[in-house]
Image 1 (cartoon, rainbow, N blue to C red):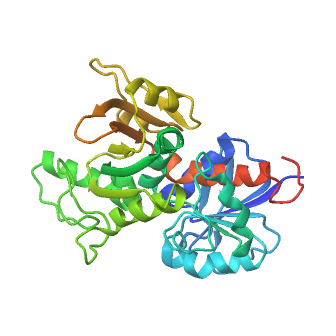
Image 2 (tube, rainbow, N blue to C red):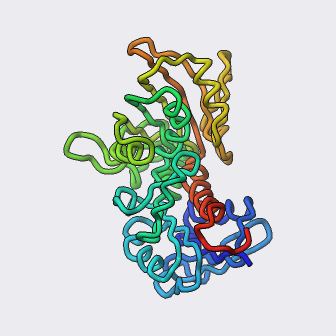
Image 3 (cartoon, rainbow, N blue to C red):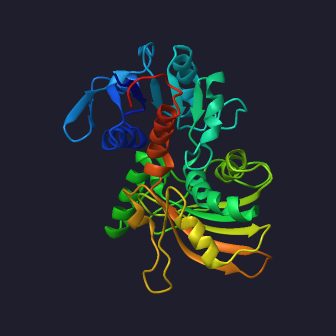
Length: 343
């Protein structure tokens, strides 16, 4: 007997990727429900190559008897319906920002801190981190274990799919408008995104940081180590799928490029592609549709003691969202935290 899994927000970009990932990884589910807002109820979504699911309305969906809820409906919707599902006995794995920094909700990347899942039962809710945080901490974890990180400075180059399907549609429409010499007004972004870079993701905060930058700071410290200092600059770029990050790290202990490369190659979820020649690195375009976090351009930073810099990329819809959520569910099964159903 397998598990009953409800995917909430199933018609969005991440929800569709969750359904695809569940099917590809053959998660032990006897039943999968596609759940979304009332306006999407009755429509069809794909589950795997041959199955189609009829979308059910979230407002009337009864979570009783469902084992896992993979949520990606937006923070305001999760705030209402995730506690409702959790109270009905459904373990919620929430991809929104709603619960990430609540102290009694574990914030989990399975390759980094699976032990934090031990306390999920307090709320029956597990938070999926921000997409840009996930890929960075996967790369930082093996380095922190061996060399102890003091400080991280990161600049992100984040694709428009981080803003959902609407962001992808805007990049497509604005790019087309440029070629036909037509005017276009930004709707999803604060400035024209086609052939441009926008150093602004989410709202501005009082100290001048954006909320996206704040998320990277506080989430990294909650997941990896509260003593690590983090400074982030987050930039939206005209790429459809895949986030890039330029990461500079200062360690407590001496580190060489070869030692760092060996530690990264041995780490779960990391793929090192790092040759000092034309094309000897991975770009967001190449990472799209792939599971690993790719690390390239590993080199010493001579401006600080024990400094190292690297470039990392990942598919933000997969590892940055859907895959990480499914891996959390797989870890719950592997650790026996969902009961003794067949895996």
